[in-house]
Image (cartoon, rainbow, N blue to C red; front, side, top):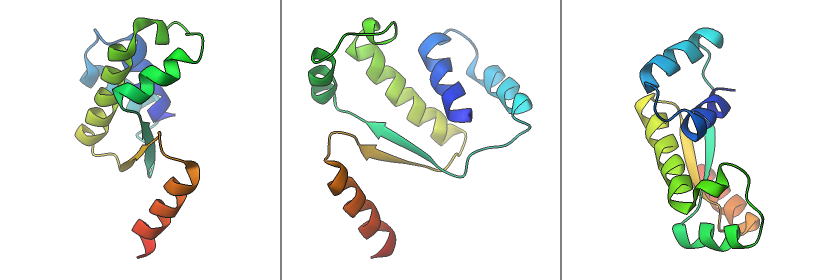
Length: 107
């Protein structure tokens, strides 16, 4: 829930004070934070390719730079709030992602 709220924050409410919105969010969530958030990231080229393959919703219509800004801001917020997270290159094949995750955790 926290991550969804943060994503919505950066998609729709960029002009508001992030610290105040975080404070209100934590009140609503009774100070609960997730144990881990997985952030799927894309490069500009990969995002451009994927965007060319589909129609765009309201947020996507704002452009690639806007979406990359949201992606970077989400990671920065997670770091600032000291929320455990990992980033995964979403352009990779799912099997490669799983194998890499397992090898990083156990080897």
